[in-house]
Length: 159
Image (cartoon, rainbow, N blue to C red; front, top):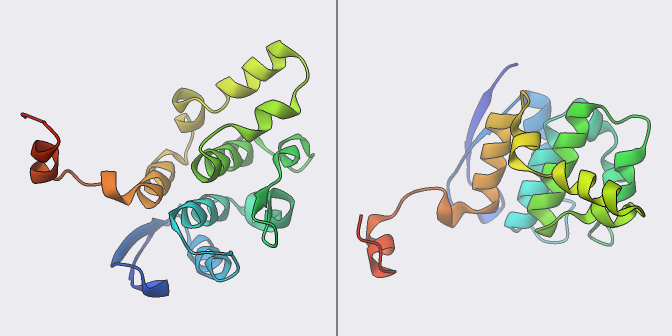
């Protein structure tokens, strides 16, 4: 996999240093950020995640509705999904929705628990996308992506 590092100030953001899995990933990210309702950290993380896999890029409109701003959890049951693309979609949903929206698609309690487990760190990160998932987390939570000793001390930290 080719890794592309991009320093940009797109969309008036602070200086970004984003690692992309490919040029197609980078292109997708910047194109889709222009289509979202608001280029906030939720949408940036969503677009970044969806863009890292060729299948998810191709099926983006089956994953997310750009007009309503809603995710489409039913996409996880569609035939185009692979184990890798499903992990990418679950990470995107988790960062965008702060939850596990596809769990409610299951009727049986045991199936709901199984679907919830598919959002676990162990399940999601056990794949080639792990470094890029970490990048997505940094995009979603920029305030926690670097250690700020003074801020930590201000909130009672002693380390």
